[in-house]
Length: 422
Ligand code: EPZ
Image (tube, rainbow, N blue to C red; front, side):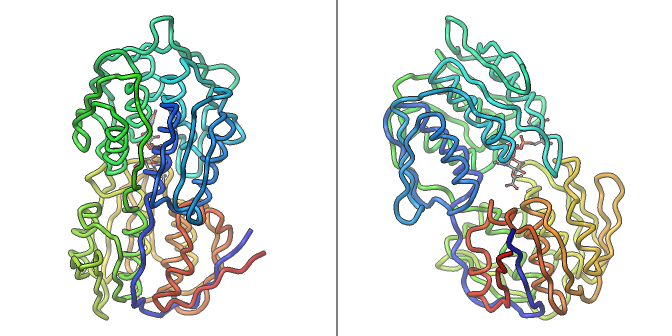
């Protein structure tokens, strides 16, 4: 398990190329199961989660061709050999559950392992299951697997109303509905940019679909989807992470390929804290002064609210603010695993249920810390970039799931950061 060593205290200065969105790519790849023609994705990020999804699709019988050093994927599912998504794969990556809808739509059956919980929460799938049932699937839970079958009628269009917003359940339902007979209306749909990207890809494949980015999405089922080529949307969480890296180091960074509209809520928070954000010809420019940041109170919420996937990174930044901030995590029940490690670096953070009270300190101190999940690990990297002295972040395989070449991108802006193979 590699670790990352950082000598902190250097303001970041330079440009960072933003990669394609991990969470968009992980729902776009299973789309290929919906038709027997190839789907080509460009601007694909080079991440371990993408490799995991590739292996899952290959285990189902799809062919995955990687071109241009992995930045282009062509996935051909002209034949599907089996419909089993094994526990060993699904337990490592919850997004594997996104093959449920496409397999049901294409094959009329699916056997997908329940993903189980992870570091940030129980990660239930009840909303996915109830939506598939609304579309006519018969679903049993056996030995830790979801056993799903369409009756003789196949999937049929219906009204699917989610009691709470779910990105993954919205994605599974959209994909299943593309091949259902008739129209499906999804109410209280997730509005994330990754959902918009999924819909735009399906539209390019011939699907009649509308309402993406709103709470109501309408899909006209059609069995005749065709292959297409689609560019993956920029990764707003990677973008936000590097914006926060510039802020915590009081640096100035230009995010090439960044789109401000994808991170508008974070921009509001950073401007309140005293950071200047401008659009540039190449993307977004983040400029800090050498003044300490102002405290800001934030609550995470479904898009367009403040993203839960930036909560840990923001907490690291506010740990050095000139005052006390409150952060409420409304999406996941256990997404404060980074707090104990930030405290080891001198952060003053107290927890009360889903609320973290962050009393800013003048300076964090470098320390050996351990990553527990993807976003917690990058929060520790950000803290190390600002801390006095040396920080060693262990178990960085978490990082490699969601950040392409992070040490190279940060080193390109002057950071003293190296990966140490162990
Ligand atoms: C997606 O996860 C993202 N992952 C997550 O990013 C992100 O944090 C999350 O959306 C929220 O924005 C991918 O897109 C691959 P949800 P997902 O269903 O779809 C509960 C990262 O760091 N829920 O919107 O699994 C659930 O427990 C990852 O990149 C149910 O109760 O999230 C959570 O509390 C982490 N039943 C809330 O809803 C269900 O059937 C939102 O979950 C489904 C979800």
